[in-house]
Length: 317
Image 1: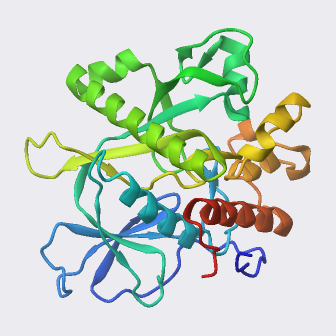
Image 2: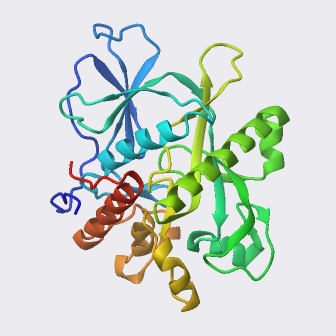
């Protein structure tokens, strides 16, 4: 069994840890980014410290409730996956950082010129894309065959691109041809090839451990050296924040009975927010409400189960 933290409603943001030798650069939706202080051991080095907090986001907004322990799972699972995929593409990790106050949460990483895009690879139809599919017959702006239902596999994985928006604003899907025009055909082909190879590796590993990887989101950067064309896998890797997992043992049974597939990721938070119980209108433009303790506990349990099934180690930190 995973060690379960206390699940009160916590609406604080960052961890508040004092990190000698580091200066906070900014806070993203989930992660706090630090650069070396002028008097620290890494002064003058092009390295950064990424610390995964317990914040959670849905509908491109940060929820005013934290999931205690979630940030640790994100970091440890990302480190595990970065190692499993290092032969496909280099990643930005230098080492784990377990400084006091950020134990199991920190990654020391190389400085990169980040591409301002999220690359989404989907091997299956999931509930979250059914709205677009029903209205337009597309998924991530890609035309797809009619008659698909949740859980159906694609003949070959499809790839989509989202232009990253500022904090608090939604990311914008863009067509693949527009993406090619923005980055050039050579860069687009490189990103497509690597993203599909990453998804295939992730899907195969997940399948061998009783999970179905429905889709995954990737971010890439390039070495800060001028003119570098080497692509680097960055941010996070196959976490329940950036990927959708189903249990293989549930998959056929639930689909045959016409039941909704139970996802092991942050989708449980999104579904609660979109439900009448939350009292919130997704399209209102207002900030989401706090999520209740039972949804917090359920979310953590799903994250911990994915970690245990993938790594073979119960979550106990």
